[in-house]
Image (cartoon, rainbow, N blue to C red; front, side, top):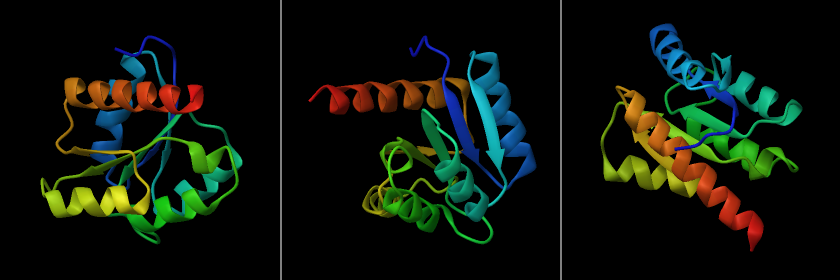
Amino acid sequence: MTTSRLKILLAEDDKTNAILASAILESSGHEAMVAADGEKAVLLATRHWFDLILMDLEMPVFDGLEATRRIRAAPPPARDTPIIGLSAHDDPAIERQCLAAGMNAYVCKPLSRASLLTALDKAMHAAARRRSL
């Protein structure tokens, strides 16, 4: 598992889900900043440096797909930040939409500690491999 402390943007409009995900991340030694809608997520992602973004798909203002497209269109380092999509829908079509929008991975809710930390680990390892090429 990832051993270094990560600075993570959590784009999640549901307060219960945000509290749960933040608790998992912080108890694992990571720092989480929460954005309650897609517009705020884009604003934070383009103004601050993050190691990783967790992006809920269904949010007000911009949904997760639109927020991801806007982040991918931004200048570095925002556009290069790994993004993991979060959704309650376990559907291969939604996963394809996430990847097409520029997300690096997709995790189904409800989140478990194991599924979230495994996704973080895979995304960070993949990002490190891309940087070393």
